[in-house]
Length: 224
Image (cartoon, rainbow, N blue to C red; front, side, top):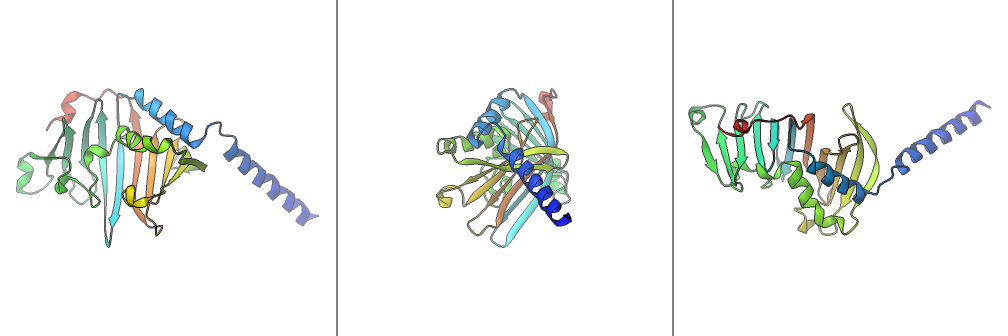
């Protein structure tokens, strides 16, 4: 009797899990359009941004205090130990940098957004770090019905919907074979994503924590 009851209980649990995943009313593509529409309502946001990237036998990880204001102004303050105190600002097509330590910390340096000094190991720059850029990059793939909802997960204390997109030609998508995106169910914004290559190796991840939206960021925050 006990064994049979246990089997029934596990069957019920499995059914509930299946239902919790299947009753979400939107497809993956429709959810992504909701993200796009939600971004139209956002004038600014701030958060803690954790970035990891790997290429070959090298990898790097940084933690930033992150600020974004439309139409497109970005401020990133390094708070992890490496390069701690360094400030990067993107506005009007240029990146301004004030190093956190050493003699150069007295000066503001100016770079093109694609300059290797202000890009990560895979050539990804500060101007490509915001939600708007993230959304625009993915829009061409919506026509292919690429996004699939594969589950729900807790990320910290946030309930998320997990999307997955697989590339038909990884060589055309910066070496990304598949991508997973965790979308905050309440905020309708991406709060985490991961990129994997054809060998299932993690080559990039980004986490957005302590998110505050439409806080009224001042213009002078985006000046050195």
